[in-house]
Length: 472
View 1 (cartoon, rainbow, N blue to C red):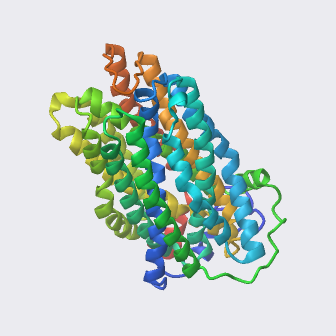
View 2 (cartoon, one colour):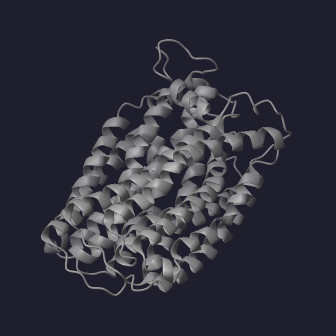
View 3 (cartoon, rainbow, N blue to C red):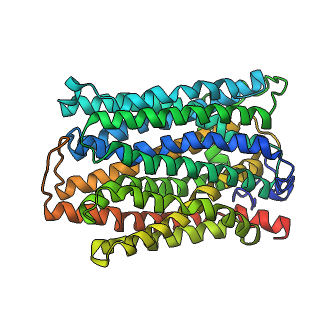
């Protein structure tokens, strides 16, 4: 039995985990370049947060789009990502083979900000027709997601392209996670404040302009960080056509790399759960806590703990390993989600404390899976990183799918409960069924999804092999 893949015989080009277990603990990575690289995540944090947090609410409670149509407007563009991200990954690998770096594609992704603004800048005649408004948002969401993929895929290939080891990759990703948390916190806290209670499209446009400028500035800083960490190598041309079309690469990396396949399956559930929680947060604050402005407080409670706990998770993983820490995060996240079912009957303290628990777990749910991806790549391909973009393309497609599935599942729960959509400024009384859907969709559903993620993750065996190889 092959330890890295679980197959009966070694697959071509595979190495034993011990051969790739460690090439350093990351201390050799220059800190200034590492910080600049990590700062690129601040802009990414804004984009992964704001649409997930506000776009569904913007559609249903500002533009008057019914929940089922609003869910489709967010789901269909993300379905495009399933094909788009692997293609970008393949393109990224070809760029590195031909030019010695992925920087050209990375720089193209810095055009994200205008598309982000256009998402919310719905013209008056379009906003007057809910179906047209949903189509506008969906079309610009496709454009914005394509530009985000152009940045995200080559950016996330960097830790795998670097010559560092098991703990070194976690160190690199821990820097990224701290800065990503800042971006999520900025987006999650400022966006609801700037948008107000969704009383006008104009407020959302102002919000998007402010956060769009923030995004593009830090994206460009991240490009410089990648350039410093990975100076352009001499073009080799060896991987340009070697691995075939993008979809063939997807099939190949999933077939031949069992640890990566398990990790992807688990992260699909994790991403779906966390994005469902983001989408449900404004509804929970407004209808269950009767405090629309409390969205900012809960968002801060969800994200802020990661600033403190990410370094602690990194240190704990050096003793326990990434797998055990990740399983712990998944278990406590499910418990915290169930605790939110108490709602306003327990006062505001209990929801805030439960959200803090989710936030502590969220830090690990981001840090460990992302740092385990390079482990799976190195275990299968050793020092050859010509197909790194293919792996990151599959990974970011998985994240994008979860980002669509989470809001869609919540919108489906709202539709089943009879949630009534409203235009800006309208007051609508929700039925008892709608309130039940808001609450259970925000608490029981994410708890069940995270429990499923824990069950899938428990099948991951590579981390035990790597830690044994290191004598941890």
